[in-house]
Length: 258
Length: 269
Image 1 (cartoon, one colour):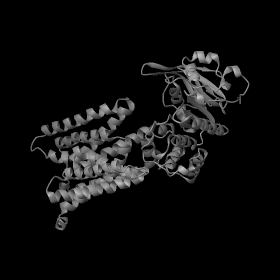
Image 2 (cartoon, chains in turn purple, blue):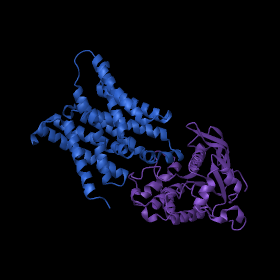
Image 3 (spheres, chains in turn orange, red):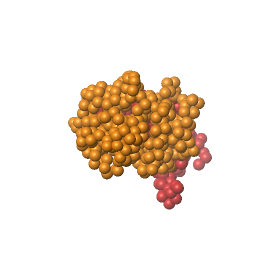
Image 4 (cartoon, chains in turn cyan, blue):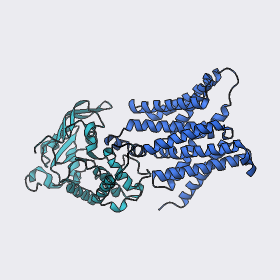
């Protein structure tokens, strides 16, 4: 890979409520990566994303995003928060919710949507296969449809990097597989970074994997090595429990990598 | 009954009720969708401190309540944003402290004790013409601000974290909303009084939510419902010769109960 990394995390530590959540995390995402960070629940995955998004300030270390600070650049990121971080009983249609993802690009006062914004919203909903749901209230959708709407909102701002927090946790396995395929289709347009504790949905689709459990273990390939598993205590238990597709494992090295 | 409309106090009461309905429909919608009901309760009770302060300093109580309540709302917002304090706890403290301050100021004011009952439970039949002008101006300001910041207010009340990621001015918008709530509360004190404000702020919006899937529609419906409740409450209270504020609230609560009952019997599919 050439050029500066799109996300550059160096020596980052985070302490929340006196408890260390991240310790000396070094982590780089290059342009065009399809990067998955796996690890157990409570391992600091969401915290890592929030540090990248400038929502949590690290107690040590530096974070650079697209050559600037997270706060300077985060409107160029698309963020899919862990499902149900907001209230689905809010009176808003899918179309309005997706459209609101453009607000970071609208500098005029008062903020008004233009034709360009509406076209972008239509494209994002079409990409996620929810074009026909635009007029529906979000509370009336199924879990999978709601998750598509949240991803569409992240896509509507044409982000440089799409960041997803547990995108498959509330959907059934086939839908999760389908989401991953959708994300693979987006790879030509943007870098993708996702975190998940559910390794079952991963496969040869990702280009890089890191294992995070307070400390991060990276290998810069799509393999999970024995060192990473040993290092990130708790990870292997999850891996086995979820039936990891073996082509991601080290022993099949070089066989089916993308 | 018709003859009562010839009296200016009655026409003033109706105008005051309609103006209050506009404010409570629009701002009450945000209060309901953002779940700020107890916050609004804290702000409205703190307003009593402003009324007492007005008496003590010899100022117009509503004017001093306006300044005081806006200041309290901003203070609560700052505390919860900066100090990461539990907002719920702050509300409880401000709620009681505001009332205590009001009582203390009124006690310290020499001379005749004012009609506190009117401020606590409202007396819309005594709203003077000058106050209508002030209420009209407040409603105009509230509507203008909501129109200008409609998208920002939506983004922050819907998903604060995502609004932050989009680099919208989340802090300033949150404080702006608190100021709007404070202004609305002060206006509603005239109509139903400090203790009953919460009901007029939440019930019309809560019923409107049942029948609307968009924020703007919910606001319009809440305004219409508020107008129906205040006008029918004023007329009923006149006919039955009972307090107006309490009648307005009981009409609203009765309709709310009926709607909830209907929803239980005939759930939405």
